[in-house]
Image (cartoon, rainbow, N blue to C red):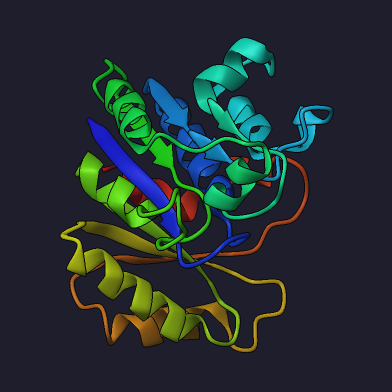
Length: 225
């Protein structure tokens, strides 16, 4: 059984793309798969079709309706800010204990594969005290760290990796998702990271544009075991 938490070194780097690609690969193998992205900011209820939950619903073969949204992403906020700030804009807060309980229930399900997608980067605040890293540590499942290939990604990725290690979070793999304005070839970025993270698989994910391009990402198949 596969249980993974998909996180990133920052925001807008491809977490949802990677999560959707893994779900599609699992289903193509005939495996059952559940995906949850419990916390979403920047969600427009008037246009759910343009959201990350919509991408994940499509990857799982689910209809984009109220029941699916509640099952995939029960904490949805309008402002495109960190979860603590986005929640505060609506006079709300995230109950970290309830968030962990929700995820544990999903992870305990019968599916062959359960993927939990985080929000923002590793150290993004969830509330007044806790970050995404605390959430990950409480769940105790391996992480997949998504990074870009932009200038500066080497430092950001190695710093995020240390943050995970300091919290005792196992790193299953690093996925370098090719940035639109990449200053060096993707393979070179992967090779450079490899010199500093011995023992951690690193996958280079080529940039693919277009709707549902996540359906064709064979580079990630090894992550499913």
